[in-house]
Amino acid sequence: MKRLLALLLLALPASAQDRRSGFEDMARETQAMQRDDMQNPGMLWVAEGEDRFNRDCTACHSEASMRGVAARYPAWDEATGAPIDLAGRISACVERHQRVAPPARESQPLLALTAYVAHQSRGLPISRPSDPRLAPALEQGRALYGERRGQLDLSCVQCHDDNAGRRLAGSTIPQAHPTGYPLYRLEWQGVGSLQRRLRGCMTGVRSEPFAYGAAEYVALELFLNDRAAGMLLETPAVRP
Amino acid sequence: MGDIARAVPRRVALALALLLATPARADEAPLTDVPGDAARGRAIVADRTRGLCLLCHAGPIPEERFQGNLAPPLDGAGLRWSAAELRLRLVDGKRLNPDSIMPSYYRVEGLHRVSPAQRGRTILAAQEIEDVVAYLLTLREEPPR
Image (cartoon, rainbow over all chains, first blue to last red; front, side):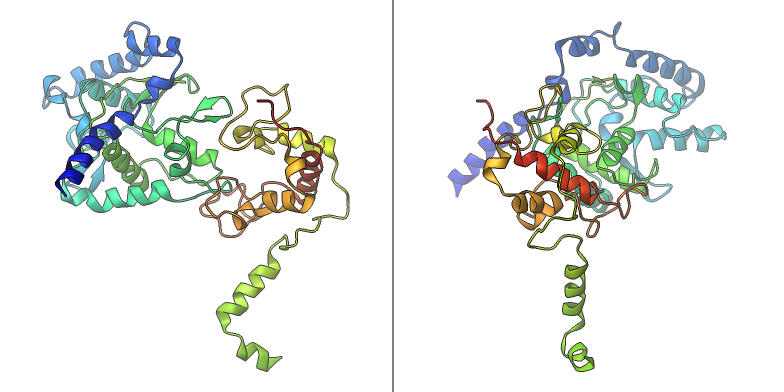
């Protein structure tokens, strides 16, 4: 029994090491683009977010207090009694405290603010969601991740767990660890959220995507963060 | 007739009805009366938005770069399988392996959250399946090693 436990403990770090950020499978030039803040186009969004933060948010928050926040999201939202992701939290904060219409999902202002806040956690490990109230959504996310969908009848598991590292046409299938969101995608020619990326896969398998902000996406984000717990945040990442 | 209907449990009757309503039968006779056209089949296989085949499979279609490697090469398919076997794998390969990642190209039932544009439609039409079968039968060389 003791030996088994020791073996298991030995096996744990190994499996953690097997997890790869999509960064590692990118072309060298794309990696260089992400590494160099002067070249990384995502830093334009971070800079815009910084301006907005300094203008609209510093009455309550400081830059230093934002460090580590993104590593803990999605989190439990007391006001709605539901899990909320970082973009949802920022949007709700604007609405509640600034008494203005909240910025829409995937809008430039919200992406910029989210990129700025998440950037404050660059290099920090993603923490495992620990609030027990998140447990049902975490399980919902796990179920959604394993559920076949669309005309092509594929689940996330079938590509991103079972076939990660293989090539779908010319692209290496990543392990789907959300370490760099919001991130700059060359395909998008812009910064987008994890929800936008999830929609991309859903329409790719010819299924009906959920609406932005849907509980299903937050559940998936929660599950993916749990699965990537301990990996380091890269925001703003660059991806092909 | 009424007696039989009463004797057959409703679930069994439903399963039978579904089986009979399935577009392709288990014996996989041709889906149409028009023989498949291998040239048209090749074009469907090469088309990443119609056949989708090269996203996962490699095949002897050199003008199409960036072929996938999630599934076995198509080369030699005509040596390994008969027309009926190929047809079954295209129509609904999940009858052979429920865990397969290969989409069922001629099945509309049992799918979840299909996008509105594709709902109720098969991935390929019956004649397109016949064309692809005709093309695959021409692939009689093993893949390059």
